Image (cartoon, rainbow, N blue to C red):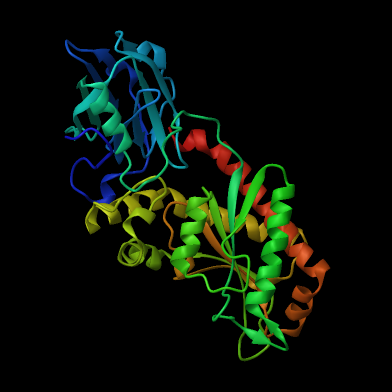
Length: 392
């Protein structure tokens, strides 16, 4: 196996094999010198997706997992020998865990393999052997074939939640139009106001998927969100119906039926390097890519449901006008991303005179913005409190 980046799955490539979380067994794990190099032997409660690569300046080996609960692990106690100086365990990108091993000398990957046991647990074994300085530097330089910057793999505390705010339509796709109002324009105005409020919160940061009257394909909107490290995507729309009776806001998540096919659609339509944050799937076949996306969706789909519920409650509390059935699901393509929770907020209907007035009025939009920001903050706090329980 070449030293550099490797993405591997243990066992049959089927999404149902993974539950999305694995517990680390420190008593059965070790990182120790061998006669020539270093061996990493990790015991996990189940197989998980993983990758391994080396980086230079300083020399280190990085193992990413999706995802491992390190609770109870003493990194210093796991490490013996002199060829590796420091071991760190923690969180990597959202939904992923990371192990970083600082190396005292140039060591290259000789082998790396995760195997399932009869009981359903897994063992990951990585063997490092001496290489020249030149060979190590070359392997580290080519560690990310997608060109992703990985020069700072050290584990750091999580930063502010990044919210991708997605104003629906734009450019050649104006969306709904009624009485001089154009959905693309109204949603861009509302999205900008939402971004400003999120950035003023001090606990979150927002990015727009479009900031002008331009057509941005759905795939590119997800790319923008992913590149910004988004922890969620909030898509804003205001539809129009033939009759004006329907009014008020609704919050949509991806329907259960659509979830079954969403990963396959994404694999067909997106660049492989842009399907999951932090992973390059350009060298993987459809089964690997789909299995990984289905696995990640096991975590993000329930998060989307909880986000939708939080938004409905907070919009109502903020005095925003809601539809008589404000919680809905549908096969909406903008909600297909697997690696972050996504909701679509239909803030009203341009076919309804009352909704048009509310969306044209700064005070009416302010109630919507207030509800959206408060809902996201409440959801984020709940997810943070839920995380330790989810990882057990």
